[in-house]
Length: 290
Image 1 (cartoon, rainbow, N blue to C red):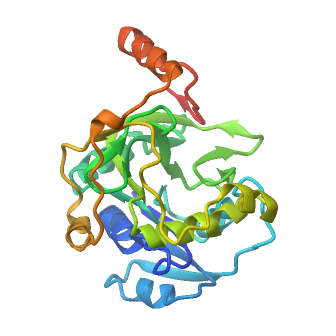
Image 2 (image 1 turned 90 degrees about the horizontal axis):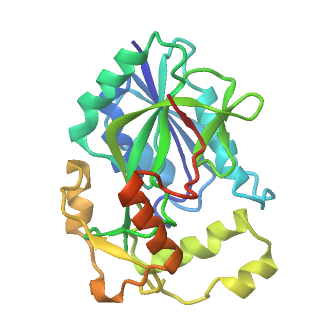
């Protein structure tokens, strides 16, 4: 069994992405790792080159900044990395620049890859998600956070990154058939220095909206206001070992009392239904669990 990892990144230093931690977290599972490094305004290329692994293969890309609808450019960059994987790769492990996998899941993921390698009905593996917000001590609790997503797919070039690169589909706009596995991805996209988060919000919204929308809806504040969130819960687990230095270096304070939680009536009803039936009403599912 041969496994290839793939990801894309641009301006990792400016926007404070844990891309080194992201790549390092899945390297033990990978025989090769393709990193699409986009045209950056910082030393992102040198940062990726500094990772001490001969598994990593860098491809240089230029982002199409004219794509300003639905985050399509992110999917385009994902596909560039995916298509650069060697032809003899069986499974492709996708990790985004703000995602990290805990080392405790490595053997579970490896076992699932081996278990389903020859079962062609299984086109991908579905992971659970922990979405951190404000600091490394809180995770999102409301239903606006997606619960699961595909992060391992077959090396089948009929598969492509879907919409804004959150998930995948295959030729004919078909959802992938997947197995849900006992492993989680830790999403740190909403844990950044407040200045870096403000910069990211202003910059990345241009891949979804025009200048007029950004002017009306995106605050031009120097620092991001983390207080505007509906509901959080304390994180009670441990973080991946590769995140240890980054967590110790945190230089801002976010301490939000849980009394400030305010789930909408709709979310409260959904929670009751889910507890009673195990079904989550209205959940976005870009996959078919088999």
